[in-house]
Length: 228
Image (cartoon, rainbow, N blue to C red; front, side, top):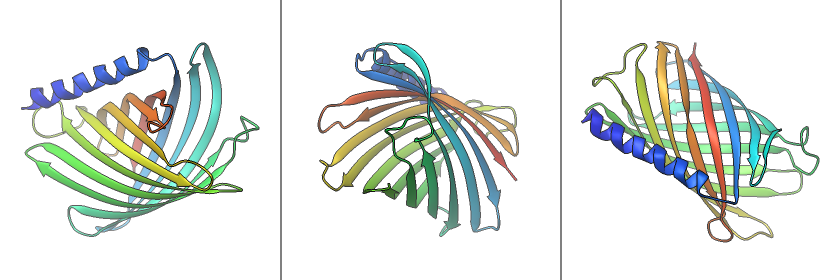
């Protein structure tokens, strides 16, 4: 059964890669992230993170431009063994790198449901976001499904690897603009380096504004996750 899910996620990765290289109107980015988790109690945990986005390709030319930096925090309360409720605060700075861009303060409310069948974990995540700019507020609704599983055996042990696959639908509403629909597909491979350290690498492909003129964006993902 592990091999079956591995093949599915591998084909998912190939599909995402094909989507990227087959498009002419595509931008390619690098998105490294550092995430710090701390379990305060059996029902409450906090997360702090920082990301930086660099553009590597702009539809016709190779390039390297720093686009933004981002810092954020999530507080999560466990409602039941399967349900979590989270509240987040995020700040994104783009004006340091591009004069035309606006900085953003984002509030997030999140409901997360997870279940485990055999050794495969399934997740459903609903997010409501208020993206606050200097002269505007955008409201975004996000729904994501996810699957992850160990690549060796039925239990993830230290120094072993795992696979993650996700798909997400996003709907954005803001004043004086047409509602926007986006789709994001991603797959990652992770390593459990120790009980408190994980490394993840993968690819995400974004279909932006699919209800108007679709724009394609591919992201090389790299994440370091540590726990205290």
